Image 1 (cartoon, rainbow, N blue to C red):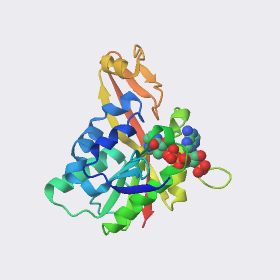
Image 2: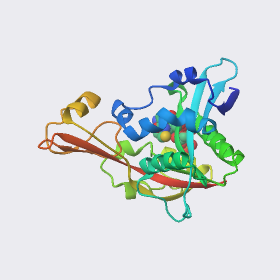
Image 3: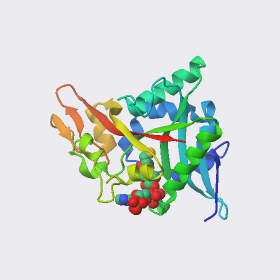
Length: 245
Ligand SMILES: CC(C)(COP(=O)(O)OP(=O)(O)OC[C@H]1O[C@@H](n2cnc3c(N)ncnc32)[C@H](O)[C@@H]1OP(=O)(O)O)[C@@H](O)C(=O)NCCC(=O)NCCS
């Protein structure tokens, strides 16, 4: 397949083909909602779309965002992960602060093409795009794609688990490490959001009728359910990686 990978620009209609990658509850994260609401307007050249040249169909997309950070990313990145970096990028944009590096936010492969090796290509395109903008560091609060199958395992164990060949057990972390990234640290509360129990029932189809942890399919850690207070809170851990480019 011959791919044309370029900033999404006005080809927003092609996005639709890439829908369907996430469990419904994941689409309720308000911080992500804020980013996607403004990504085309504020950072038009940091979202890439891959199109199959033969068919004209969208194949994958890759979102990233420039932001300012005064620390050394190889030494440690904030616990707040995804939520933090989106807030930071918006703050920098609104205040006119010069960004110092780029954070990957999402790579999404068209559902029928997953598992065919495209993620590495999109990651390489994202690294190249950051370099073309003059940046030398790309970081990412990676959502480890296999963690949902080990929902009770502590993230600090899962994030550093390796196979016999020394590469991460997690498939998505493995793609980053193969591309040259180093795992920096866990972001323990990377994505945090709440809902009433009625909202969680409608998002997941589960009962949410007992106080305590609830294992929702697709979640990376159990959701905290509080029946007495009528709310439940999801705290998703991610893993910061750093690509020196
Ligand atoms: C996660 C995602 C980007 C991976 O992209 P992909 O093109 O399907 O993955 P690849 O074919 O490049 O495979 C990458 C690795 O994952 C493994 N893998 C792929 N699908 C897998 C699955 N369903 N289960 C377990 N491992 C899997 C591959 O074997 C490969 O490992 P290897 O190179 O060591 O053999 C893609 O599945 C996706 O878009 N998912 C939905 C959105 C998402 O979760 N994005 C990531 C967080 S932003």
